[in-house]
Image (cartoon, rainbow over all chains, first blue to last red; front, side):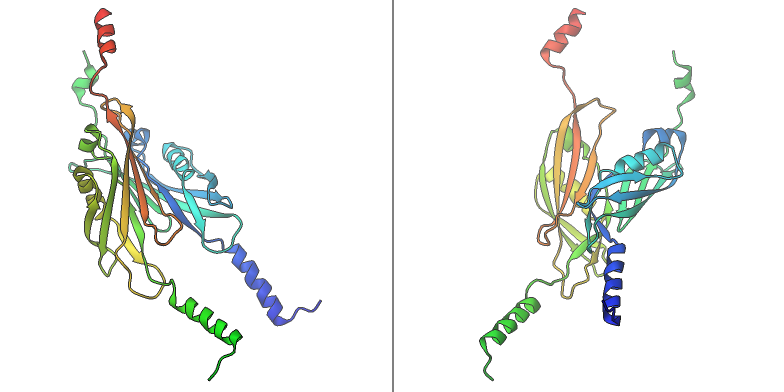
Length: 140
Length: 155
């Protein structure tokens, strides 16, 4: 079988097409700042690697180097998302970046806030948990 | 020039392809979450709110106006829609105003300090069908039922 230039180019194109699996989120699930992390004062960035099935649902989500409340919350949240494929790929990967941030200072108030910026940035902010007053500690 | 039958069909097919469906759309670029607002939650108000959004050239929301829904929910939905940002899809043409459909659902009751709300956005596959936002919440349990009250009294 002869491989002319055109045929090789075509095959290469097909291959590249399959490799570059592009996915687009079609179901975005909100997330509240985990209470435990808020009490501990935990904040930071969590990168979640998603493995996506043929139908766009998430097979598995990993937060490789981290094992804390934030990573756990992010993984639990990421599993509920759904994606749609843009080009022809059988299954694929996606990376979501969660940025957890605590609003500090006197003006910091209000509930936890969720913001998703296309295509893969998730921002979760919440107000600082007020320290318990001394009278409450003493109790009785 | 006379066209043969074969060529005529080709011409029609090509024309259809050119004319039919390609117009630009505003696609959400930045989604902001919301909680089930307190007052409708306590009043046990559920339902749909449809918000029509007019988008400025830079993608920020210029105006958000509820088309239908309960007034208390409308207010919250509009407020949320104003925080969103949009971008133009890569198709030629002028985009129409996007719609956001909010669906508020109440599920069960909760203790006053510990009410959960959740927020989900779905983009269905069809171009015509707009963005669906599902906000679920829980209602406060304000009264005991009679039997519970009497039990407490007995104890």
